Amino acid sequence: MTDPWVALEPGADPTEHARMLRRAHETFTEAGTVTRPVRSVVAESWRRSARAGVGPDGTASVELVDGDLGSYRAEHPLARVMPLFRELMGTFAADGEHLLAVCDAHGRLLWVEGHPTTRRNAGRMNFVPGARWAESAMGTNAPGTAVAVDRPVQVFAAEHFIRRVQPWTCAAAPVHDPRTGRVLGAVDITGGNGLAHPHSLGFVQAVARAAESQLALLAPEQPAADTPELTALGRDEAQLLIGGRRIRLSRRHSEILVLLARHPEGLTGDELLCALYEDESVTPVTLRAELARLRRALGPGLLASRPYRLTAPVESDVAVVERRLETGAVTAAASAYAGPLLPGSQAPAVVRLRHLLADGLRTALISRRDPDLLADWAHAPWGEDDLDVWRALATVRPTASVRSRLAALEGELTAPPDWPGVTGRRGATPA
Image (cartoon, rainbow, N blue to C red):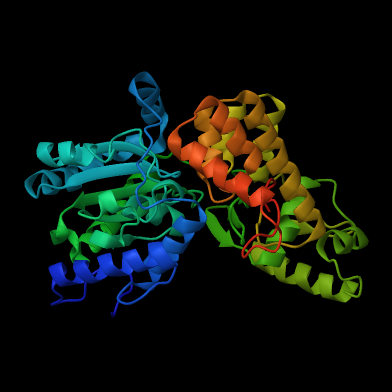
């Protein structure tokens, strides 16, 4: 396979390939092993699906209906580019007996449009607006997996993890906020085996890029002296938007900037050493070298010393979530929370802040008891093993899939520690 993201090699027999995939899927669901001809991207997705407790006979849960669905869609950023999606994909979907689908960043379908007969058939598996098709809820599928891996993906036939979805083929691409780079959701084309072609993958990717360009044009003009914006949630390497430039920072520079943005009064060299390094043998010379490299990356004037501080206010997504939590705006805080703060960082001060922010938000969600907010957290990668949140969700939305996942987590909690794969309670606090 020349491109692992394309489902079928040129000249491959779709019927024979689908038959081999069904056999491989049966092997995986029975024995947990992946055999040929499963692509690596699909194998990794199957494993994630199994770890999330998805069963091959599951059904999508419809979480938003009627007025709740309408108001959520109206406020979603992708509503602004739905006319573009319809213009570029609507005729193709209708004429080809396909579906145009758009999901949010949590894999929840917002729009499903296209050929009427195909829509009715898809409705039998709850491929409908308001249904959650996140990978962690419905296993391998193009919109859910595209959001999970943040790249265009094509899923053919029995590559789908859920058996009832295996007659379908789909291709999806994530759509990003052009200013922050965050995933807003994904655009998807779903239909028959004819979509298992490189062109369909390239098509949805081109549509996603067009949507991002349109969103950039629709965004309000930012003045040249705009406040620098730091994005550090849900990513190992932070991004700084400053003076029209988007700077991707190294992991260490990300840690430093997060801490300095949180301490506008500045930090001494000794304070930064303690905040960044567990190893007490790290010398001030090492830190000064990192700060010199960061100063060059940021450009002149933003980073001062004695103490080390930022010379201008920097707005961070961490501060946005904190402010919203402080004012009780839990829904707004949850929408701004793109994931754990610098999840790969082991810097002591960053780890503390990461846990503080996550604990504050999950506590607020549990207290609020809003089923949609709890479901968003529980089905996100950082919440899929959060027992307390799943328990709270089960009290307000006791669907079969929620009860099943909760039972699996509680089973792990009570299982003997020497059972394979059991290491004690999983993930009450996101790392």
